[in-house]
Image 1 (cartoon, rainbow, N blue to C red):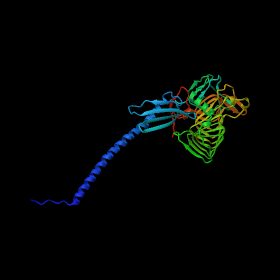
Image 2 (tube, rainbow, N blue to C red):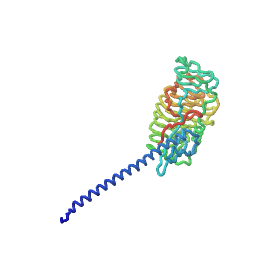
Image 3 (cartoon, rainbow, N blue to C red):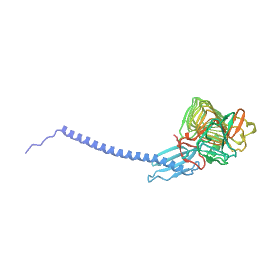
Image 4 (cartoon, one colour):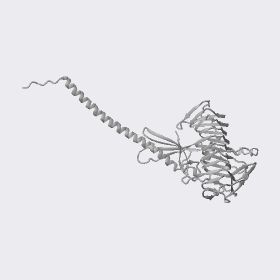
Length: 422
């Protein structure tokens, strides 16, 4: 009989140690596999939720959603994700927020929207007031033009005759006795802003060297005063600045996505940024200003301001030399009173890249890369007034990309995202 074999305790401990290591490794592999699967599913759900917010926006764009209305969007498939879209306004632009959620996961997208025109915008729409358009000097219209029944003719101002061989470098169509209508909601929002009483809204005081950023996920911040001087400040996002008398923007101010509202707004020489300015009397843009897309300059004059004493005033909306506006320039006045001065003037070396819409007289020695819709043209030269004359002005719709998203004209264009908000 063999004597029993003795195993040293150290060897047994080593075997147990190796077994424990193997068990830990196996458990780790199982845990890693489970974690990878769990986070993979969570990531897939997150991606689905983000995609559903985009689907919600596109769904809302194709429907008539009222201001403030919350639209319940049917889920795209069997994801079980809840989607809601709400429409409001930011300045003159429609603002949509699309919210998607499932369980504890949610995501929201904020967007400014406008209209896109797949066939492109016409270079010119001139209301038919039973008189022709006279074109003189170095003027040039490139793109489709809708003109009065009397058409377009060459003219001469101060010895400067029309210099080109063709009157319109594009197709000609006949305009109507009414202008294309803006969306009623857009007009209503402009009226609401100009008549708003912000007395009950929370405000912050304006300070020198102020830097303020406010997300569109937060309540709007208001800055109100009788006269507001924006100088040496940086204001970004969901901020509304209102003056009951006058608002002045200095070149040391950096404004991004904010909305300015006042009876009179003065944008001094050299201002750069992107914002919306909405006034009830006048906007003056100085020299060498550059407003990036999507900016908007809007004057909607009240009838009470239209008195005989101020018939010889300067243009209500004036853009000085070497300034560039990317976006929308809009002058509105429903009065049928005949006037002999420009309500909107774009100076000789100034440029608007986008849309110009004027319900009265447009003086255009400058350039529009995009579309002009106007009740009438006017030219002032050597003390004389030339009605329905385009003198040295350039309009070129071919220079505006088809992807441009801009002013909503009632009954035309497709609603698209103009800009994502933050």
